[in-house]
Length: 351
Ligand SMILES: *Cc1c(COP(=O)(O)O)cnc(C)c1O
Image (cartoon, rainbow, N blue to C red; front, side, top):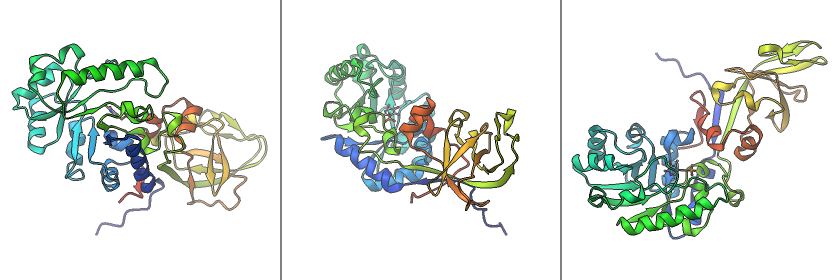
């Protein structure tokens, strides 16, 4: 008999209502366009299968991943929806997979366009580069006969600086409008989360939010609209009493000035709680601040729990995860904070 699974000592509470409400808010802000959803990188770390179910329930129908393997894993969850692979086809096998499953390839280069046509073609998307210089056909290539033969559903481009008030935004918008005149596509798509906040000119027929679905706030316009989705919690694995002069953690970077009570918490940098979050930060127990002492280790860290007399070994405590605030404090991007989370969390709250 297989024994029951032990309870988790690290947990991600996912607020599925906040996820749905964020998608609906971004869909509304997309005006006449509809919002899709970027669910690449395991839905930015929150769990892609369950995210797709929750987003579908909220109304999303267009999902974007980066890799073909990600699309394969999401096929059952995304049934009845459009699933698109942003990196595009690299081989005949990718194309055979796309044609047999209906997963949409995003064509990013003349080479990919030729591969796609050689593999039999069919409806696809096209990415045009308007200045990020990462992926996408150059504007001058759009008139190429190979591109003109494609059956383009969505013509898309990607903004480089939408999270800033940069003149690059208007330049990219203008180039994208020009691209839309050269390629006959059913739908145009330019905006990511931050691009949606730039206004309806950027929305076109389809938007592709990722970060803000999961609680990220890339621009101040979204601060009142977007709700936190991810709430990590970790178990207390040991309580101990320090004497004045005792040191804590690797390299003894903290020395107790007076006798202190500490708690060792089951979260470390392997769980995305990087060392740069440690200094001057605190965890929470029922609203009480527990300041972090010394260095964060791979699997644990130590807090001062003198103010939380009720705390016991085995209790779960809250790890603050306000993305904009922690990003400001650590210099990590909100994207990094989400995708860093790692595999050791149990995740629930999503059906
Ligand atoms: C990741 C990605 C998105 C989503 O961007 P966010 O900034 O997370 O909203 C949209 N489009 C493309 C092409 C992407 O790679």
